[in-house]
Structure formats: C-alpha cells, structure tokens
Image (cartoon, rainbow, N blue to C red; front, side, top):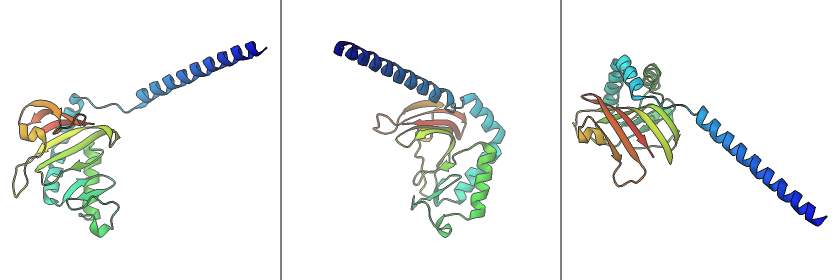
Amino acid sequence: MRHSLKALAMKLLKLIGALLGAVLLLLTFLWIACAPHQPSDASLLRQFNGHRSDLERIVAMMDEDSGMSRIAPDFTWRQDTLAWPRPEAEWGISKSRWDVYRALFRKTGVESGTVRRGKSSDIVFFVWTWGIVPAGISVGYLHCGQPRNGYLHTEEPCIEQRDSGGDMHGQSTSYGYRYKKIDPEWYIYEESN
C-alpha cells in the first residue's frame, strides 16, 4: 500500500509539473503575442515625412523652453530638478504651453514626449517605448540642434555625424543605441537597456 501511495504521489507531482510548464509556456506566448510591436524604420520615416513641420515646431518650442529637460504628456522635468509632482508654479512651463506640447505629441505620434539631456543641443522624441527603466527599449527620432550658448551635441549620432551606426553608450555593456539618418539634422533613433 505504501508503495502504491508513493507511486501515486510521484505521478501527481509529474502531472503538476507538466501543468505548470504548460501554463508558463502559454503565458510566455500571450506576453509575446500581446506586446505592442515596435514600429519599423519605414513606418517611422512615413510618420516623420507626414508630420515634419509639427516636429520642427516642437524643436522650436524646446529651444524657447531651454530650461526644460523632459516634457512628457503626464510630467515635466526642468534642467534643475527631476522632482515630480511639483506645484504648477514650478512646472517650468505654463499649463497652456504644456497643452500645446501634448496636442503636438498626439498629432505627431510622439507618445512619450521629448528629452534634452543636460546642456544638450540635441532633442530625443519618444514615439514608442516598451519595458521599464532597468530593462526597456525606446524608438523615435533624434534632432541634432546647432551648438550655441553653451549647448553642445551630447547624443552619439550628432557627434559621430554618420548615416547609420550603433554601439553601447560610454562604457556600458547593456545600454545601447542604433541610428539611421533621415535628414541632415534628423535620425531614427533607438535605445535599449
């Protein structure tokens, strides 16, 4: 009797293991199938060509709002603080100005806004993002602005001035980028970590 209970327990454990494996496989498949799909370079180029004047307007606005480092649909960062939330008086731009940015983001498909790192003349536009800070990917555009008033190129494509390329940022072994020039000052730009 003891032997048959032990055999039954072993069969039950194998069945549970097989069921857990099947559930894990199903969840992995669903995660891959349901994940948003990264836009192709061709679709990004079509989107860029269709909304170029609006993207140029965002560049001009960011140049006027040089105290801002990040403008997203749901938060802002100033060059001197990343704290959020902040009182409206400390946003760095007015609510009406932010509403103009948000309308342009929706119109151009720049879903996650823009960033200008430090004293950079370069602006990154986030069209598509997936993941979280320690492990994610972003795809969009990079505008290489003219260095002036202490603002310099900080993004690799703007520094390298090549038609395409990719590598790791600095000494990183996991934070990489790739780019493809689509106009003298514009790139399709992808970052991943």
